[in-house]
Image 1 (cartoon, rainbow, N blue to C red):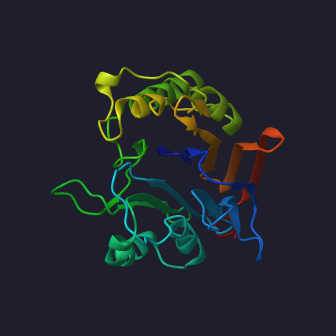
Image 2: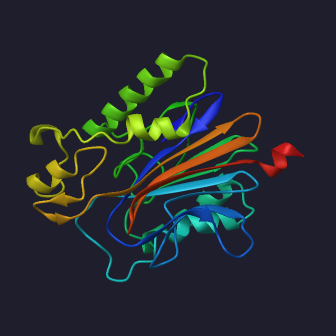
Length: 258
């Protein structure tokens, strides 16, 4: 996830662990744009016509609640609400113990407000924090945790920005150049949460589906670009039954355009 002063550019990967529906305007009014969980109906990254954005990652951990609520519904709840990000986050933390570990970023592009909320905060830190302008990376740990692949992505994105200077980088190009990285890191520098072999295969930015551990990998790569003029572009490359498909949807934020 990236936030720079003149535009917001989230980059996102979704794993191949359950069926998903590709990027589209959702049924029921066409207010929400994003991919969708084919089982529970939630999402990992989506936005609305009036400039609300939400994206979610699971926290990598060994323990799981016996009957947790679905984390994928958290972005949907924010997108369907009218609450500002802070208010929504404050209400969410009151019930956060009913979910397995999650990281949630919620934003209102009209007010340029972005908030990070987690139910696995670092000791001594709160569960809610404002996301400041700059380059931030969110993986399956807390925001800006220095996992090797997170730092590699941060460095690669900065290089791409420096290369283009003031020129705009196309969202499709960002996905291709930044999110297809299959480099794996040495086991000695990886988080020691899962067994070493599993951590190794998960250490690349793009996780290849076929590994000795079975079929588990990256199902989709997305980039969302928003400019101060109110134009939002959402690009997704996703794995469907027929193979890899890509599409870009561009629209004008309603409230900014009024």
